[in-house]
Amino acid sequence: MADTAGATTEAAETASADPRYQALDATMKRRQYRHDALIEVLHDAQGIFGYLTTDVLTFVGRQLQLPPSHVYGVATFYHFFSLEPPAEHTCEVCLGTACYAKGASALLAEVEREAGIAAGDTTADGKLTLKVSRCPGACGMAPLVVYDEVAAGHETAESTLRRVKGWLG
Amino acid sequence: MAVVTLTINDHLVSAEDHQTLLDAAKAADAPLPTLCQLDGVSDVAACRLCLVEIDGSPKLQPACMTPVAEGLSVRTDTQRLRDYRRMIVELLFAERNHVCAVCVLNGHCELQDLAIEVGIDHVRYEYLHPHVGVDVSHAQFGIDDNRCVLCTRCVRVCEEVEGAATRDVMGRGTNCRIISDLNVPWGQADSCTSCGKCVMACPTGALFTQGATTAEMEKDRSKLSYIVRAREEHQWVR
Ligand code: SF4
Ligand code: SF4
Ligand code: FES
Image 1 (tube, each protein chain N blue to C red):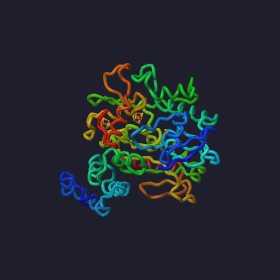
Image 2 (image 1 turned 180 degrees about the horizontal axis):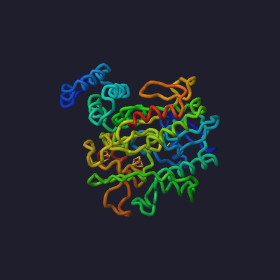
Image 3 (image 1 turned 30 degrees about the vertical axis):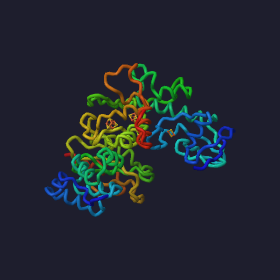
Image 4 (image 1 turned 90 degrees about the vertical axis):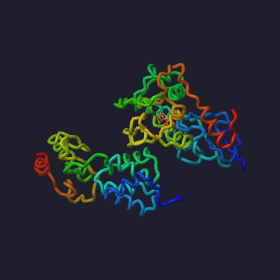
């Protein structure tokens, strides 16, 4: 690549106006605006903005000189990336082998019923996102539920519903 | 350029060493079914229809991406291969909503031709019947996801021949869709030059010219290979 910046004036203006874009641009610069750094850059972008907005994806595409279709394709391929704003709270039920054997799927069904959403979805009021995971690696605590990034072990349908009900208001 | 000798279905054939098994099979009059392969764009071996057996290897290999080699013994038409090919085409039908009777490409469709070629009279798998849309926001062209087989020929031709890279694939598994730019309606995709190459490249009725009748909607793929050859060999006369 000829000039390291690769920045269009428009993109550079966005960057100078908003500190979050400055931070994002800095992470891209650190990676010399390399095309193959796209996944790491999207990872950082989600850390900075909470989720990937259309503007963020456009900005990343411009700075790394990648077509928008390509950036969107990558952002939607990995479960890690979210194009929707995160809910206030998340409840992540592990369905790995150990948790499954200890009844995690029945527990999940209870939460789905209570919240009125399916795993992977967010309630209409944006209060709760219900997710499933595949073994975060704490099988001794099965069944495991992660509430807002904090793991809780030996959960039951009752204990999970108690937490979730509080959030659903 | 070296010449190698190999065996295809027990017949000795020679091929140039930069060729693929698909080229060699074609020359040896043992044509293979293909879908994702398109002259003039890169190969991805996505559809697996051109799989062949190679003696001494338990794994089937896609002929479109496997280079010829001295002494190879290749089979292109065993019962196992025929079974798989039929299965693959049936799964393609089951994955989306293909209703040939109301399709603009009826009679000129590569998927339809394949189904006939591999002998499909019915589909043994349950149809997924996904709810997918039709995008006719572009002034001239349209895309109907119901008929898309995700061969990515449109993606490759748009990026490699037209240089616009308007198209890509979003999502994964059964949720994969062909998109324009940041998943905007095609008519709003700034990068699209409305060249129509993706429409020419598409094997099915998924990409079509709006207002065209079944009789008009034949896809001229020779135009694509003409453009590519002209560019590579600097020959601009047809
Ligand atoms: S019309 Fe041309 S530029 Fe537009 S999406 Fe199709 S191939 Fe790409
Ligand atoms: S739109 Fe046509 S060319 Fe593009 S992936 Fe679908 S079937 Fe293939
Ligand atoms: S044509 Fe070879 S895998 Fe599709």
